[in-house]
Image: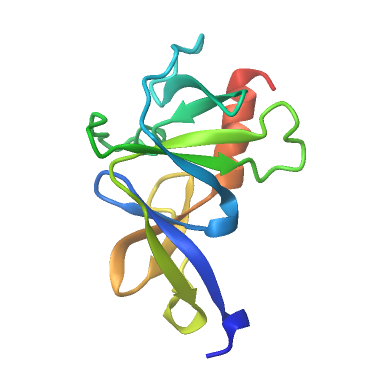
Length: 153
């Protein structure tokens, strides 16, 4: 297979599902740290952390999709993601709480599903791989837009 037909990705483990994002969307995976409380009263916004001198919001993807979220544990991580929106000066990054250490995944064209069912969640674009039914593609732009609106940025 030609190299240009595959995309290097990460599987981000959540409770009950995994998100598939390209490596280029991930700034860094860091150990879970307790967040500073945020002024917003949104159950999915866990708080704010300082990462490399920048204050970033950290969200629970499960709660954004009205799913049950696990409490962070010893293996929990935070995926620091780049904001995919063009107007990202005020919010260049955001974090997602992960339940475990991410794994690499090479997305090959012939293994990707052509269905884009969001399973009732505005932040899911659809299934990624027919062999892994819990592997989902997130809509990071929709997530970042909601986050920016909520934070007034």
